Length: 200
Image 1 (cartoon, rainbow, N blue to C red):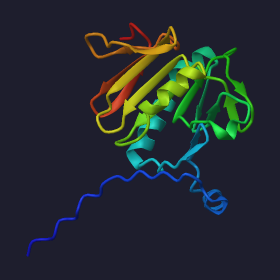
Image 2 (cartoon, one colour):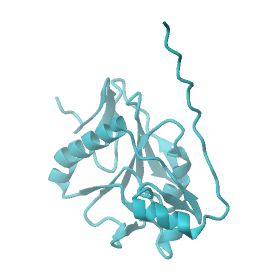
Image 3 (tube, rainbow, N blue to C red):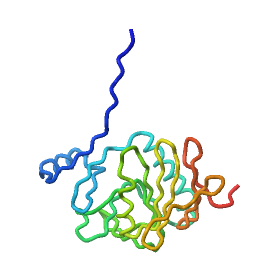
């Protein structure tokens, strides 16, 4: 007997013009708001990252700590609120990782980082809002955004120049240079690989 195929679920996006306070409170109490972001007063409720997303995030974080933080004294944080400041709870994003250089512009405000970290890392999942976040990152002065495709492991580096992001072209071996950190990144089949330039 042949098993019935499971219908493929279509991703759903929902917009609530006014979110009742009891829904916000329920999400906060249950921890369901961990990935929620507020974009200019509009609540965006993102799902929790899947296992592969978390593996990539952990691996990139480990490599950045080993290669960059240990050499520069820079800091790597994951899933922290970033905001221009002021009434921050009305306009913030939660990148997967942020990189902070010693003496950088971002200010630790406890619950959030005020202003742009030097580098933001986003793991791209199907139907997420990674690319829609780029104008916000420009507005707070994030100097680079690294986008890693969860499924293909493809890497994109966007560098801030004259008020807009420019995609950094990879070299012949697929390495994308990060001018901010001095590192290079590329897809290495099943993972993302980072290195210092001219490393053997």
